[in-house]
Image: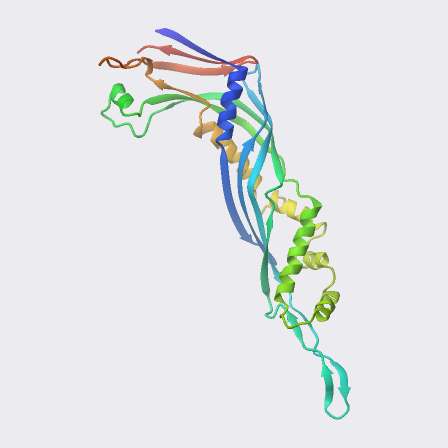
Length: 310
């Protein structure tokens, strides 16, 4: 039985990994109801950048991979409590009770009014700070290969078996999404607009100002509704980063990345039997079976070794 060895330099391995990284795309959405508010999110992302290092302990380490959100949308729905103003007498009438009274305005018009605001956060960033992985070979039997086919039948029909080499992560660590303070201000403005939209169009601006003077600052209103103790943008960050154990998009990203590299997309693959001469002039291709394939790395290269023969 002959021995086969294939080597790829560290630079060649890096190019293989980059091609694999660029094909990664992930999307997810989730929602939940949590008493005074409900929330949902939608994310779509891909990966960019990163530094790759091959180690002498037979591991691969990838750091500083950018998580690029092509969509990051958070929707928060609040049970806005009803506020009513007006209805009092401005100019009393000693004989008929009241000459001029203020109209009674209730916001929202119906008790228990729920209103949702959408935050478009796709400009925000996260990062995979570290992936530690090892190379793991797997033998792949093409499910489209018919039981009665020979290796040549599978070759001619485009469904040969393959040896596949995966970059199997030992761990994947995704950093929390950084939420700037400006997001809190944006959320306040959206809630204020939501309440303004509930005010009837016939209400004059001075009455709206009066209403807001009674309601108070929007930030305080939001904190009262949801029960926020700190800053609003910190609460949004905690919501997205699973501090409340409600959503876990970061954990889902870590799992998706690990599954993508470990079992779904090989960094390298070769047919079994392996073609050494293509068919030509009416002759069938020449192929040799590959057995006992192994893959390892050191600081300079990836080495794939196998036995050839029956």
